Length: 164
Ligand code: RP5
Image (tube, rainbow, N blue to C red; front, side):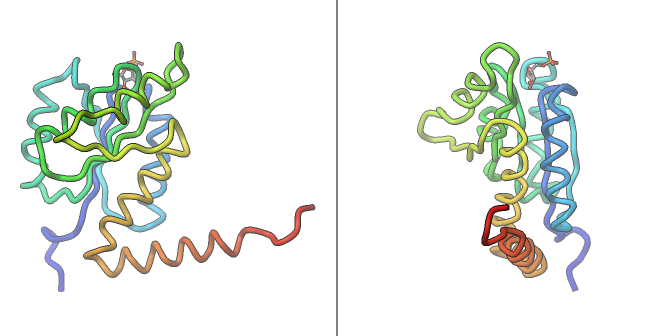
C-alpha cells in the first residue's frame, strides 16, 4: 500500500486572484482524474519570498508537477522552474491589453537551461495543463494512468460521426 507521503500531488499556483477564473480549470481537470492537488496564489514580483519558499520546499512536500498560471510579463513559471527540478507547466493567462500574447511569449521563450512546458492561452491551456500533469504522473502511478485512459476513451466516444 502507498503511504500518504508517496501519493503524487500537483501544486497549482497563480500570480493573482484574477487568474483563478482560468486556473480553476486545471483544478477541475485534476479533480476529474482524481489527482491530489493544492492551489495557492504566489506572485513572483509581489510575493517573491513566498515564491522562493514554495519552490525550495516543493520536493520535500512531495509535489510531482507544478502548474503555474501567470499573465502579462509572466515570469512566475520560469522563476519557479529555476528554483526546483520538479517539472513546471506554465499557463499563459489572457491579459487585457495583449490578449495573452505577452504571457505566452514570456512563458514559452525560456532561454536554454531551465525549461517550462507551455500550454495554450487561457481555459484550454489550463485544462491541458491538468491533462499534461496527469500524463507525467501516469508514468509511475497506475491509478492515474487508468483514470487518464478512461477519460480519453470517454472523450473519443463523445465525438459524433455525423454533424447535425
Ligand atoms: C500577473 O499579473 C498575474 O498573473 C495576473 O495575470 C496579472 C494581473 O494581476 P492583477 O493586477 O489582476 O492582480 O502577476
